[in-house]
Length: 199
Image (cartoon, rainbow, N blue to C red; front, side, top):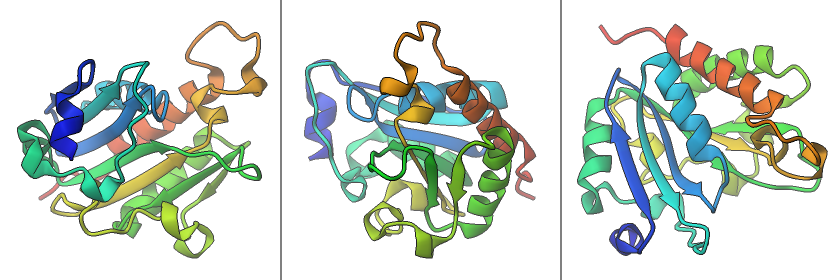
């Protein structure tokens, strides 16, 4: 099924291998908007590796993360083989969580590390890294989820629309990225840069 998505006209897959810290955004483009842009910017600034899938404007095809299969993508397989840890960026929307960022995934030490840096960057947001406080379907714990496949696993970051610069809060704001997105990217860069290199 992932192979079919990648073969769809207009779908763009990109990988850049740098350090062994990686960023993922495989619901980018028109689906979970700006997640690919944020991942790309953070990875570039931090000298980190990045894997992206961008959907064209006329496609809203959401594959659950557990179905994003590296066996269907040499690019994704090379990324996962190269990195030690990864941060996967996703978009979500809940009526009561406009300013809540959720940090799931199986590497809880990395989750706490990323949470610390994102809290410093976004003091007006609630940064949740306690799995008990994250809805089950947003925890990113499935063993086949690509965020959990690197040697030391990773963190699934669920971003509400506001921090991605989407929605009525930013009505009339022309300049992009919006300040909240810029701050988020800075926090992610600090987290990636401050994570100890493998020994």
